[in-house]
Length: 216
Image (spheres, rainbow, N blue to C red):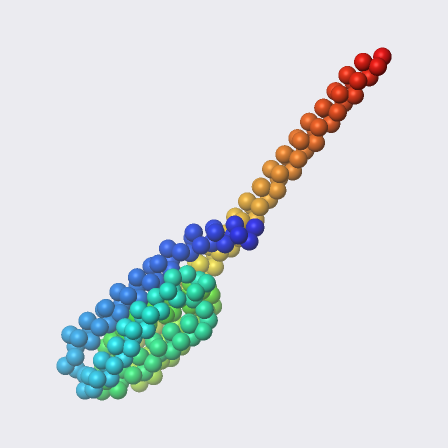
């Protein structure tokens, strides 16, 4: 039963993990291009360059970690979220106007990938926890809540919690399906044994009848 449940679950969740892997790579490229095109605004470009170089190395090295739920451990999730939060809080050090003007942080939308990993691994409660930390970091980075910051925070919050809830529903459906398949297999086995026993009894009775007829 456990094996069947695991196979069914992987068949449903695996496309989500593959999508998350692609998302992390694409958003890394987006963050790098965003920083490259807007490099004039950085008073300390070396801060942005150093963080993005580390982010690129971290993303590529940890791709196997987001390949499936088994590899995505709690320790990795904590470190991954720390990287995202660090990038958000480093933004004012590279761009002095970041606390006075709305704009993208150093990791940009890559941060959402870290939150989505929490959602896929632990459901909507884990997603709510991670997105709340991201919200706090964004408010600290901005200095004060602004309309754009509030909009981005709510978007990440709602999307991650919704995905986490969908994952939990899918897992519950998989467990129900696995249980139904197990009951169906047990029922078929009982029917087969009943037929075998019934046929064996008939054969014994027929043999006794023939033997009794032969003995008169």
